[in-house]
Length: 212
Image (cartoon, rainbow, N blue to C red; front, side, top):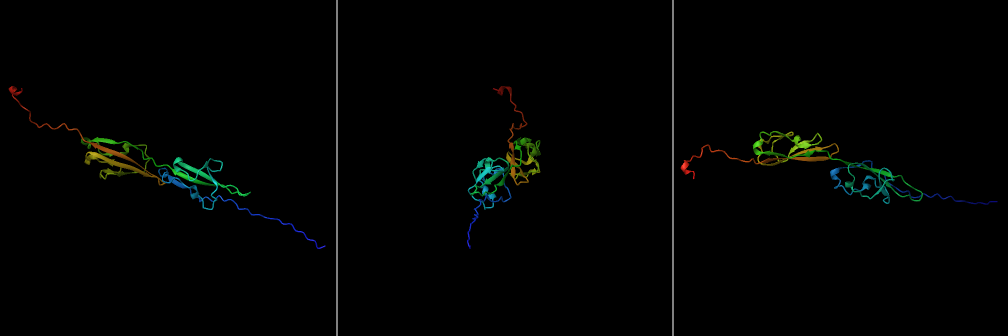
């Protein structure tokens, strides 16, 4: 009969949302540098292909608390922190969430310093001074520096015998495996000694009728 009919099937390819890709390397910072690096843009940890209308969440899933990006690193403390980026669906199309990592490393512990006071007439008796005796709770592996260039420092020992009255600083510094550095400073103060004078060696002699 030569009859023909047609039906058309339409295939629609929708634009997919894009959450980007993690660059693979955490952002790592020492705790004393969080202020200098804040606010920090978490998009720096994605490869740039992401849609920018998504939401950042605390933790390794989008079930966490939403956070404002850029983030304030000073509020994190020290440790490893995950943040997850999620973009809204476009139609029926979705994309996988992407998780990035921020690491805030603690500073090495260089100890709590205690100043040392020495009288100028006791320098020999108190010399040499081991500076480690003036620190409490420090990590091992650091080095001492002669901040005031006294020339009296050898290792952790200080020869006081050449000191004059004044204050002299010595710093203990540690740079750890993460590149974080900390310093504690011990101050040695040489105080002037009281002076009672020296007997001239000759008595004062007077006749009794001259005492009045």
